[in-house]
Image (cartoon, rainbow, N blue to C red):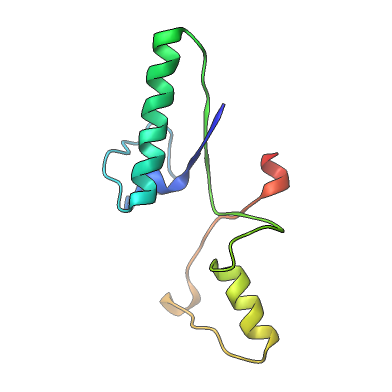
Length: 103
């Protein structure tokens, strides 16, 4: 079992995503590394006849999360009485996954 990322879906407009979607056009270096991780796991699985399962996580958060992620910076700004910048008139949607749900 290995971890991948929803970033492999790149700039696709199709929602919801599917494991059958082509993910050959990464739009970031991070996405490219996750796609290469999937390819290496697949090749290793086939070469050595070891089953593998990849999980594509969406925006993992938790106690040891990265401080540059929006929910941390927004919480800090709002707690300090500052404003946050809202994009797309507040119509943005994003899935989050709590780390304990993964574990």
